Image 1 (cartoon, rainbow, N blue to C red):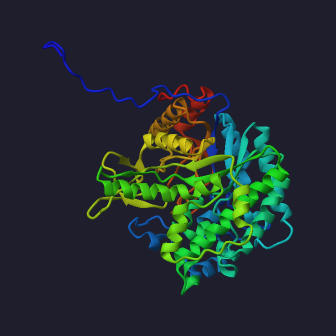
Image 2 (cartoon, rainbow, N blue to C red; image 1 turned 90 degrees about the vertical axis):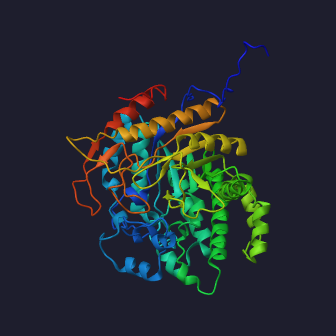
Length: 504
């Protein structure tokens, strides 16, 4: 090196710098029947676990069990209650009666897809009937036909926290093997009735949430398992869901040739808090536990580490003859996931500020901002997740939930939600960069595209949508729909296939 030569900082290469989206990318939105339909006692519908979840806006993220545990007494109270009261999901946003209006708004935005769910209890009110409820069957025919008339591709979840409530008392939820056959009867009706409309199916929404909130995910009421190790009991329920998911995928291929089945994972991305090897090991273990659910449904078998863990803890999970073969035969065609935030792992979080997010909690990442509900905002974590998942599985990916909950204010018939536009702009840009870097992504359906009742707190005031619904947390209001500023922004994004992400 001569005296005149100088050194410069190395250029950090993070890959492509220009987002890219393929032709036919499935832009759209996502809803869940239990959070939007309402009409909880209309058309012969039975009560689901969602109809027993109560309004609780002041959750303490440090008291997770206190916030999400449901007791037998809670279930009995829900069964006895004849109105909506403190059960907001019983009223939703009245999508059951207003779906045509909502679909018109989605068509106006240019939606190419809409993720919805089929409520098990609309078709089988208690889950044990041998024949489906005709009024429930007819409703989803109307819904899917209306979507197709508007060139909106249905993406359909079969089990989105909507199993019959009676199973939680009579069957101990998915801990009992009987639910596999009951679910397959429900799935068969869905495929036979709606296969003409639906190409993209999902079995269990966020199947990994079974340990975070076992009641809504698996109908498990923990106080019914006195004298048992509840973790072992949940693993047994999870095994039954894995078997049901695999057999459902096989059944779909028999009844709906050309259709595709996906796994649906909550991507709870964890970074190591520091470069200390113990922090790295904690993050590695946490991410591995998250991948368990997609690993099983993609690869068709349990990972070695899980068998070792069961042996170490002395757990016995009853695996019936033929279960492992069924899991191997019924693998998925694509990997879908929700992504809202990332978390950090550390060997010791004593004294650290805590954050929450999608029914989980952890130490705060000092490099990230948080929402009003204390969820961390990490757009690049979505790119990280897409790259990691595609490298891991080499299957098409589908982002079926993403978004930001906010306390919107309706003024002069609209909401000036620039904060939502900025959130989506950053996340969509990162999706495009992951695609440009080689990930195959089918589509993007932001969560709660029309305001709905939130899952964890059962609030309407925690709003996600591009469309404002005039209803408050107690169910007061006209339930009329209003376009937010983000409505026009997202319409332009779709029209340009992600080419124009600039502000309005």
